[in-house]
Image (cartoon, rainbow, N blue to C red):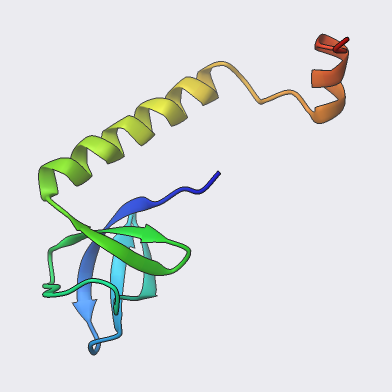
Amino acid sequence: MCLALPAKVIALHDEEQATVDLGGVRRKIHVMLVEDLQVGDYVLLHVGFAIAKLSEPEAERTLALIDEATASLTQSGPAPSPVERQKLDPGP
C-alpha cells in the first residue's frame, strides 16, 4: 500500500526543490513533477516527491480524515503483533 500526504509549500528553492510543512515537520522535497507551484500551495507528497497540486479545501479535508483515523487507532489501543493476530485468527 502506498500513501501520499498533503503538505504546504513554505519555500521554493528552484524548479526542482521546495520546502514543505507537514504537521509541523519541514522537509525539502522534489517538485519537478508539478507545474506552476507557489509558496502557500498544497501538494500531494509521496516518498519525497510532490506528485500533484491540491486545493486548500481538499488538503484540509484529507488532513482532517487522517487526524480522525489516527485518533481512532490510538483510542483502540496498540495494534496486535503478528503473533497475537495469529492467535486471534489462526486461519483454516
